[in-house]
Picture 1 (spheres, one colour):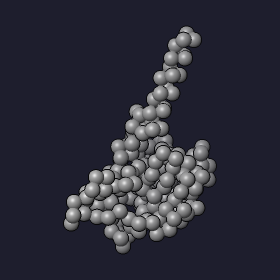
Picture 2 (cartoon, one colour; picture 1 turned 30 degrees about the vertical axis):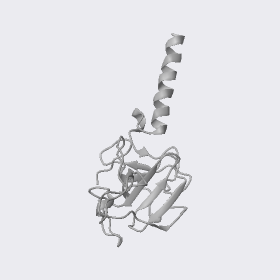
Picture 3 (cartoon, helix red, strand yellow; picture 1 turned 60 degrees about the vertical axis):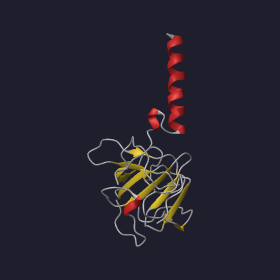
Length: 168
């Protein structure tokens, strides 16, 4: 195999291709469905740093009362033994990929979702026939400024803190 160019996957696999693009909903996914999900770099398929656990059961929440896994909704996932769910931003686009996963596009991120429980969420184990995939879910640390949205959150908290100190 030739050496991968910069920004391309270095593993001996290719990125999955879009089988069905711009779906309205993920078929068969509703409240109570087990999912494994993580934020990815779409150019390489590699997982990004994690701050939230997106492995667990789909739940409903404030930004998605019905618990739909569809466009225009946030996807809530409650990890096992957790008292709260974690959620994505509003989903703008859903693509079904050739490896059986779904890529959820939000304003600032792309998530790779596998229906069911996987040991890890990594494209290196992905097979085009839809066999079980697996990698620890890793997502950008949004609360600490690891993404554009996270950087804005840090900036907003600093600004708010300064305003509150001035009022005291």
